[in-house]
Amino acid sequence: MLLYIILFLAGVAAGFMNTLAGGGSILTLPVLILLGLPSPVANATNRVAILLQNAIATARFHKYKELEVKPVIHITIAAIVGAIIGSMFAVEISSGIYDKVLGVVLILILVLIFKPKKKALAERKSIPKWLEVIMFFCVGLYGGFIQTGVGFIFLATLNLVEDFNFIRANAVKVFIIMCYTFFAVIVFAISDKIMWHYGLLLAAGNMIGAFIGVQAAVKKGVGFVKIVITIAVLVACLKLFGIFKLLGIQ
Image 1 (tube, helix red, strand yellow):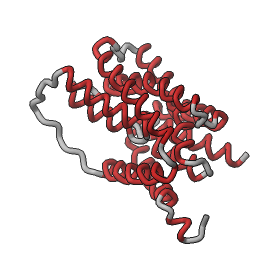
Image 2 (spheres, one colour):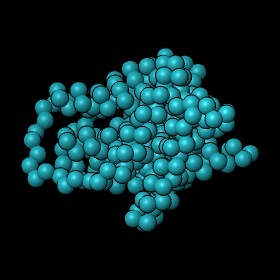
Image 3 (cartoon, one colour):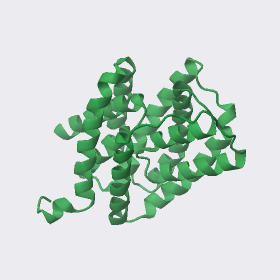
Image 4 (cartoon, one colour):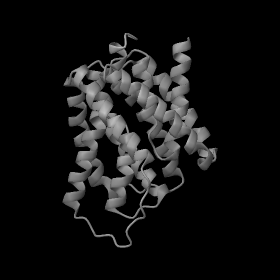
């Protein structure tokens, strides 16, 4: 019962974090790993929550007419193709290699979170469609493989493609992530990598957390969330890089 409570609360926190900009998987994935799931299984199981959360977010953005799908169909398809390939790599890669890759990614994302933001350039050059397709194929490839931190990558990439305002960029982000995660979940499910009871419980927490986060004061929540992310990432990295085993903790 304690295991389920911890997982549910992690989902609530992740849902709240995702309303701030993204990064919920930075918390849920380490929690799943710390609870004993092999990192590839944790990665796959986490996608169930991501799919359902983004489906609700997409519906809400569409309801408030903040989401326009037609202009982003080409980059959505590119991201889907990339994610399918990325998820196939995630299924085949060994747990030991995946642990090291994930550990490095978590550290890099943590650095990016605390990196001071630079002011946007006044002029923006137009990017050709073919280059947009390549860019989002690569983002989809990463999202299908690891997913963690892909929300930040999407927002940064969307900002290169077009001068989206924050609301519209998030609307496009959740729509594309929803689309490619649907196919990633199929790949992981066929490979029998998903712990469904964990994934659905996590999804319930994510949805509740997102509902709370919409009404929360963003400025008051960011500092606390960063502290939680930092602790979770550092502890998870100690596990992923085998430090706990060297110390005789596991």
